[in-house]
Image (cartoon, rainbow, N blue to C red; front, side, top):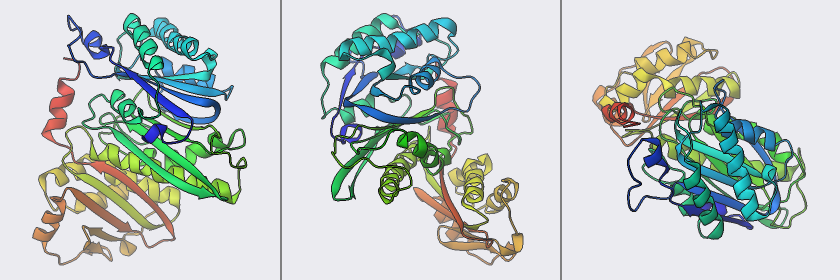
Length: 405
């Protein structure tokens, strides 16, 4: 159920054939998979969001930032196959129309609807198809359609990405569920990902906006596939209060418990994105320990996970740990080489300023596993962080060489 796991949330989907319109195909393929979904809450939600840091933003991002100012969101409408980015005034009109069409069907005001788009940049949305799709999706809303919604937002993803958890808060059982998409054009500080986490927790107004950035920093901003940050990245958190608990306020023990649940779901989704990177055959987890601060640890971990040389070494099973040390050195994080210890797959390969006598064939075998864990202990303080990435393969080049054709 995932994004509809929390009480009071429903989803509906439709197959609009958006990708066929975007790529200029002469007809919508028969049996086209769902490429549009609507998420609806029975109650207005306290909502927080973070978006792309790219100066080129899709129309949907700009519209959502405006609608979030009212903080009374009750629905999301999301399409895949077309990013509605670099589409000028028409793109903004289309994004606003998506919100209005959804609002009319759900008896809401347009600013209670957030819209997201993902896919090819620079093409206009096929609004006639989307209009029919919104009507269909709003007409088949169900709490059981969370998995279908996760499939509808996929582009080059090979599998839907969902996660959910229950948290006991002050005697009330709170549900948290989420979905995301992302496979290519993924890099820290948001990337081509759309991510949505819902909860039925009752919270004081503004709590989601207070928590969302810190949660993104510990999850989605630690994912990298290819070093490209997109025009459409959006991470939204919605709380509708259906659990009936006493409203949770900032700085409370209950807020810490709720945040921990959000982080768990967000990290599970982040790992799923890295595992499903375009052309990926291996998941890379980078753990940094004993850094000067958590922020410095995040910086160092991201540098290793995003290094093209590290990613290609992993893909080729080349036990070239020097590339990892190099990435730590240029990351910008404080580093004392004589205190650094580096492990690959549990094997110590570097410490006290030099490489150690290690069986390189064992390191090669570690690089060849479906999941590779790299642990760097910096020996400075108690800062910790993780980042997730994947190998860089020939298949990645093929996918992106043919993306619009």
